[in-house]
Image (cartoon, rainbow, N blue to C red; front, top):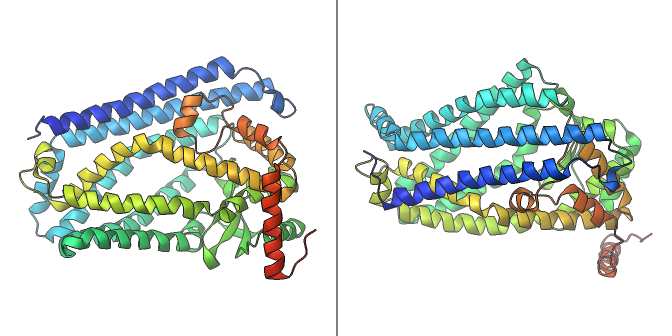
Amino acid sequence: MIQFNFFLQIFLAVFLLRSATQIYLNRLNISCLRRHGKTVPEILRDTLGPEKLKKISDYTAESENFGTITNLLNQGVFLAVLLSGFLPWLVRTISRWDYGLMGSGLIFFAVLSMMTHLLRIPFGLYETFVIEERYGFNVMNFKIWISDLLKSLVIATILGGLLLGLLLALVIYGGEAWWVWAWVGVGGFEFILLWLFPVLILPLFNKFDPIDNKGLEDRIGSLMGKVGIRPKGIFRIDASKRSKHTNAFFVGMGRTKRIVLYDTLLASHSEEEILAVLAHEAGHWKKKHILRMLVPLEILSFVSFYAVDKLLHWPLLYETFGFQEPVVYVGLFLVGAFFSLMGYFAQPLESAISRKFEREADRFALELMGSGEPMRSALKRLAVDNLANLSPHPVYAWFYYSHPPLLERMERLSQPAGSKQIAEGRRFNKKKEKKHGSQSI
């Protein structure tokens, strides 16, 4: 039986605080959009008209309201699962068959994962075939949607099963230092996945072809060569068979590193704008943003595994949610749920770090392109094509935004590069001359 003790009271208080924060921030942002989102910003008057601005406001309000409702319903179902006694019932049901501790744990997580995926299906359908289609983004048919869903389920089952199997094996057989080996194992698993993702997983969903514009390919190669980036290839993916959203990104590492351009981006942007977007992405690589984010995350992961080890055999954790004795796989689930809940309130810190990196990448693009105009032009087009919110509330942006608001980015790119950045660029070019024997232009 569920015990309404002090621990559960704290859990519920934090749980409700998270839900209240989500509702408040959503209302704050939509209210700000309604007040300030009716006037076309001066910097966009050559690109954006009143009708498109209204469409942006409507799309932002509808998609964010739907996202908030979806989150709250999912959280409500999760809370019902915790407080209804379903988890003890599920464990008792599984224990009727002799699957062993590892087998029982995998079945336990498989059941919960399947419930989660089934719950998400109607929301995913509505978002894709109602909201995204209403605003002209969705071009995907039901067959492709189902195919993507099934592929995602298979991949999640295989990768999730491998990772959970590794964790459970280490908890059961790894001795007192299991959490150290788990930290190493999970980190290694993520590293391998990052390496294999562009060559094994992405091609299951999208077709990768070399870009058919030889002149653009040469310009991209020349631009990347200036900063010492040698990608495995420059590819176009058929994003247009699912959506009209535009994007570009670097993916993979080492020999699997690729530059990927949405075909929608190639169709709607000029070559200068595409080069500016890639210069921005190159900035992330040259500034080592992935590594600079990865190191603190791995430190946090190490501390988290240590905390899991201390909490995994804490009787109150199990008694609170209706268990008479510790069950390690249930403990992993409960501790993970609590960490996820607390992690929501770390979102502003993660967002602030990400925004800092984005500003650095924008500055790098400005220096590499020699002007901020191509990047500003690209951002204007991205804002219009993707119906990006131009009037987010500052608190909402501070909490959630991984990128600075678009208008802020465009204003920064309007400013000339400072002497410090120019000096850094010159030092970088001198290093390249010594290493590669090249001449600066």
